[in-house]
Picture (cartoon, rainbow, N blue to C red):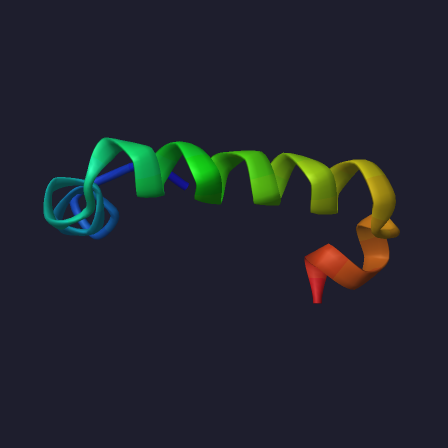
Length: 39
């Protein structure tokens, strides 16, 4: 899901915040059912 739409987000965020968000997403992917993530 990386692309032109996502780029402004990453530029606006500080690196520490981005890293924290990525860690959170990784934790969610590890614990949540894929069906839930797929919507």
